[in-house]
Amino acid sequence: MKQISRIPSAAFLLVGALCIFFPSHVAGVLPFLLGGIMLIAGIVHGAAYLRDKRFLEDESQGIGPDIILAVMGVAFLCAGSEAVGLMGVVWGIIGLRKAAGTIDQALRRMYRHQKALLLAVEAAIRIVLALALLFDPFEKFSSHIVLLGLELILTNVKLPQEERGR
Image 1 (tube, rainbow, N blue to C red):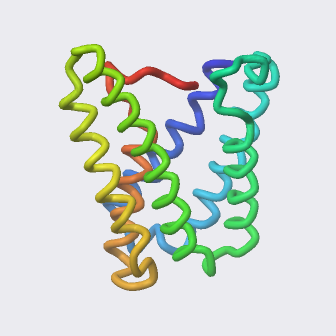
Image 2 (cartoon, one colour; image 1 turned 90 degrees about the vertical axis):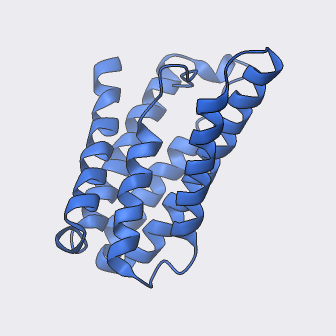
């Protein structure tokens, strides 16, 4: 199942690269690509969460984010090309949530007198990209698709020192 759960991450990376290199070509199919991957990722991660009984752990993130990811995937699939602006907003919020987790990791490392500079830089980059997606998602359409691609890649790339929550 671990190999299967890596497929959505790889697909997010691929869609992110397509958004960066071919923003105008991807725009028409992006809701279907991203919506489908989000639906699959939510189902795969949610099933792994239930199978591994992570809900019994006190520090568990919960299945809620996986359900929301799947629901938003379905919404993007149903809305089609009307969902492009909303996709930027959703991924901006996801990016801010990831930035918050990265800030927590950096603070834990600093408190333990461990190196945290790379995590702090990563958090700053996540915040900047997320905020750029949140403001005027319908303006400068192609540049927002490129930003979305960067955010998709950053959200799914784990640095070596990062503690893996999933």
